[in-house]
Image (cartoon, rainbow over all chains, first blue to last red):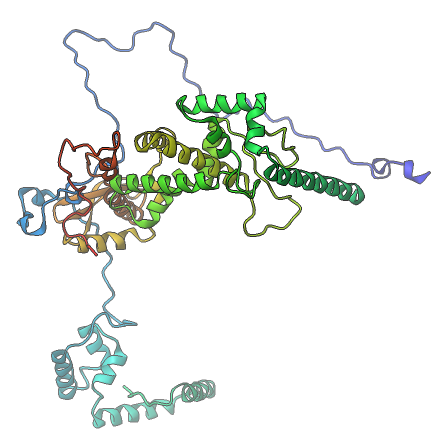
Amino acid sequence: MLFTIKPSFLKPVGFIQTRNLNRLYPKQRIPKRPKIPMGSKIAEVTETTSAYYNPPASSPDVRITPPVFRYDAPPIHQRDTSLSKESMFLPPAVSRKSKSKGKLRFSTHQLSSEDIKSIQDLRTKDPNAWTTGTLSKKFNTTRLLISRVCEAPKERIQKVEENFEAEKLAWGSKKREIRRQRASRQAFRTLERVAQV
Amino acid sequence: MSFISRSTTTFRRSISMKDYARVRWYSNSGKSLIENILSSKIAISKVYTLKKRIGLPESYPMKVLVQALIDKTVVQNPQYSNEKLWSIGKVFGDFYVLEYIKCKYPRLPEEAVHGMQNGWMGSKALSQLATIWGLEVQRREEGLQESFGKVLAKRADPEMLRKPGEIYKDEAARRAILAILGGVYLHQGFNDTKKFINDHILSKQLDPRTMLQLQWPRRQLSRLCKRLSLKEPVYRIIAETGRKSREPVFVIGAYSGHHLLGQGQASSLNLAEQQAAYNSLISYYIHSPPFRQLPSDYLEVNDGKIPKASEPYTSIPLVSHGQLVI
């Protein structure tokens, strides 16, 4: 007999009242413009008035081939290479963001032999002024490449190490531990010694 | 439910087995399947209606048309099926359609050429054409005599797994159409076959732009200009409005020197540049130079004699200056 009882009877559903909202005519609606009656004059047209055809702008058609791409385009030696009058009135080019000149992560070009010689000369002359950072900014390369091209002289390296040792005395225990861990990771990572700057 | 479905499947298979036996009996008996169809009045009226609807002349033999509608999967003997006719139609159709594509769009890449050929001569395209003609393919549960006048084809049951070489409705319709084309070639000649292809197959409009898929338009445009010995393309702002608003509009043109290659319009500079490069490439690849006649027009034969051409043969300008030739 329990099967005949409906579940809706056992679980009565509460009534949810829906608020009667004014959807047809909201308060903040934009008022409608009154309709223009039929037969009313909109503009005066006289005999002297002339109509102009001014279609809206549209995208250029792909099916129209530019003259340079046509099958009968002139070959390269017959092409007009000189700048004509039209080139002076060309629209402006799209500007690109300038490349960052410092701290490059990759080299944008190969160093020539002249560049290598100039790097070596500058670094040998004044190692304090021409560091790897300064040279990398000047020649648009990475500091790693600069360090491989020319190492600093021994006096410079010794001086930097002395300064570093002096700084170490002021370190706390936390910083010492961090540095120790970093050194151990570095030892595992690289077996080759990179010049210290 | 499973019991009912099983019995239905068994019943269905028994029908197909009977039909298959009947078909083989027809092929081995003195009276062939073609003659049986020709003797049926309803089938003859259907086939004749199809003949008139397609536009075939009165001299086209009814036997060939009836044979073209019998698929090779129904009758094992090629003497009574459309196997030979289909082969002839396929070769000629591919030849003429490819020639037309190559002459009209000589710069179209191979993938686009194959796409267009498939759009005209593929299974789905010809199946749609068959539907337009009023051709019907034999249904799975339909008996053999009931389907006289339709395309007779053996079809696999849906319960079975798909296997290589399975028969589909589209394939059967395609073979039937190509068989009819082969019959036109055999009995009417070269010119009527080309007219048939122009009227029924090439009359379908295909846009070559939909066949091209350019993923890196700016890079490809740069390579194209390099190949054609043009200057590196520069993108210039032709017009713009609302740069500092939410939806600006930029019109950018791709210039090679002072030559405008194409324009693009979008709501950002990057997209507009891509659109300009894309439009430039599209206008290059779908360029169709004018040509007077197809090369196959010189193969026309009148009464067994090759006529003298009214004009000397002029090759179609397929390659422009600076393009690579292998």
